[in-house]
Length: 269
Image (cartoon, rainbow, N blue to C red; front, side, top):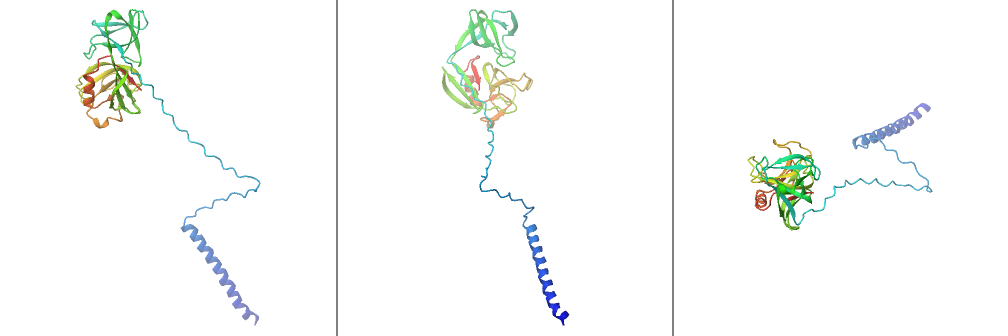
């Protein structure tokens, strides 16, 4: 009978269709399990006559470091020790006095100034005041002149302090300089006083300098003056670790304290 003949054929078609559905389900399941994710469109085929141009990567800009200044270590420098109880300072050569500096200083140290130029009876000297690099003029008869063959050069990029004598490098010491937030100011300075600190942390000796922090207007009760001193944290030597001062090992600052006169030039570069 026709109907009995068609039943097996229908069963065969149903079985094949079911198998197709099951395979499709398995494929979908594999895509989900192995994380293929959403499909990414393939680029459209291009004509063989049109070359495919791959863009060159954009180079990343390399930050340029601030150039390190040349070493300034004069073979000989003139220093001026004030004779009287004070010295008048003029802003202009031969001009009226604009300020008077006490001798000795408030710290008790004698007032000794690094001479940067001379014009007749007038001397241009470096002043320990803001802004850094301040200069003034004093009369030559108000001071006693002498010379020093020593000079100091601090290089912040290498955290070293070099001692020069007669323009020649004599000794290089490891040092700690200012951090990125409180850098040691760069420029031409001079040492102004030698103290035996009573504050803990500064080692046996501390030199005051004509440099002042560019960031801190005051620190520890002082005006933010940059010092060159020892430390009770010698593990910091050789790194960027200070608030701007230059730290040295206690044995090294002791050696300098027995050697350097006030007024010795100090370069920070």
